[in-house]
Length: 247
View 1 (cartoon, rainbow, N blue to C red):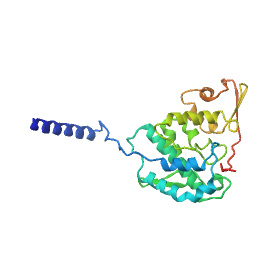
View 2: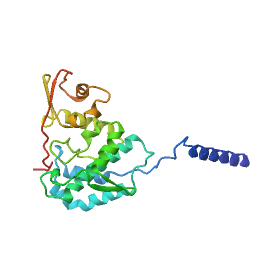
View 3: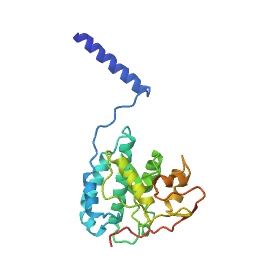
View 4: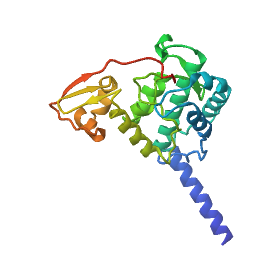
């Protein structure tokens, strides 16, 4: 019996190695559980229900934020992890890195006071330097989830509100739905009635993401309490790039 078990283990190991060599199966995913509790505590402490950030006082804990980002990039998500885990990781990373960029240059009136803020290399993962633009366009937008546009925050008043809790795998769907509904129905960001819809520039800039599977009106209607039709006149509201700071 002992020798049969050894033989079976040997055959199984050989088969797995053969399959991996020819790309039939992927290597096992990393079982590392990523901890977002530090980011969650900072958000709960310094971001209000309207998504405004107390940058002045958060700046006193920039060492904690820096340590959090260092841990996140030192032990990043595995390429073999789930799509949901990747979304959570990169949404949190984008938002935390944006806040750090503001704190590193605070005080300022707008993120656009900085030269090329979305092209600056702000973090490094596996020896690859990334900008906020890299995370948004080359990672998140390629994950076939247009709701990421309501989850990531560009530190400006016209952006979707910065959620005052960290995204988690367990609550991801609930959080994405919440941010989508809140943004679409927020009269400061979208003014919608049956005859005319004044929409955020986000729906213009990233229209392709929202209309890949349906018309823009249909996408809006998924979340809007006021329904529109394909005949509804659509215009876009000027974007307010003022810093989303607590007043």
